[in-house]
Amino acid sequence: MVQDPLSTDKKQTNRNRIYQLVYQEGTVSKPEIASRLGISLPTAIMNVKNLQDEGFLKEGEVTDASAGRKAGRKAVSILYEKNARFAIGTDITRSHVSVVLINLAAEIIEGARVEMPFENSQYYYQEVVDIIRRLVKVAGVDPGIILGAGFSVPGVLSRDGQMIIYSHVLQVSGLLCSAFSRGLGYPAVLCNDANAAGFAELWKHKYRTDAVYLSLSDSVGGAILLNNDLYLGENQRAGEFGHMTLIRDGLPCYCGRNGCMDSYCSAQVLSRHTGGSLELFFRKLKDGDKDITVVWGQYLSYLAMALNNLLVSFDCTLILGGFLGEYLEPYIKDIQDSVSKLTTFSGIEDYITACSYKKEAAAVGVALLYVRPFIRQI
Ligand SMILES: [Zn+2]
Picture (cartoon, protein in one colour):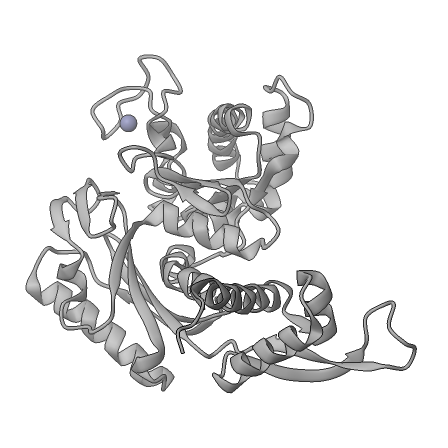
């Protein structure tokens, strides 16, 4: 019998919608699924059963039925199976490699961080592949249910995520994704590190669809997230906030120009006062060290300028991350106050927040690039 393609589509759509609803809510009863999606209860039951049989959904506890149903009626909660699939994320930096194995809930099942300076050599790439393989083995996960392996890198990439067009940090150009993934046996893709970290941050906030992520690491980068997606720009260079001009004819930037935000707001601007250690910088700041407090005050004045520019441009949540991200929580109020002194629009500073992932945001984010299509297409 030839199936009506439209009815097949409809089945697929209901299946998708049900899975996505359960994923979004964490736990939902079958009657709730039917009412929330406007489908019949038998349709909800049939689709849930199919997804259960395939190992993607499971039954949880018996809960009170949703409002409007007969008193005393109980309903079984439906949950998604977090460990039905996994994805690998690898963050390639100048000094180290971080690998995470995440499940569908974006939980890190296994992680490894290896101090290993980047080098464009066969030896280096083989080491990266070996680290990933060891991690999968330690986790005891069937490689057959790993969706893919993403690599986050500092640099400008091709639109298809298969080539690093140029990376100042890694000092490479025209480097293919296959260099990292050769012999690994999973689909692989590259993503700019700040974009990957921004994507992970947005994922954490399920009900937020737009945000700007500012990565304050040894260089300054960022990501623009619109409608739950990365806005990459025509040339994959959107969000390169580090090269906004902050001061006319100001300090030289590594890009060859002067006065870029990077020269005033990178993590190095702080860590160079404490022998390269950000941790020491913030410990001294907390202890009230006089010189460090002055440095921080100056830094804050430039950062506030940049943040104000971003907020008047984007009018949405502004997430501060990168190396600095894990230290900023206690200073968010100070940062907001500094911005409020500059801004045209009152209340704009309330949109500034510290990142949720204190570490490994980029690795998680690039792994999520494989989780997202799985959830959408299941
Ligand atoms: Zn620059």
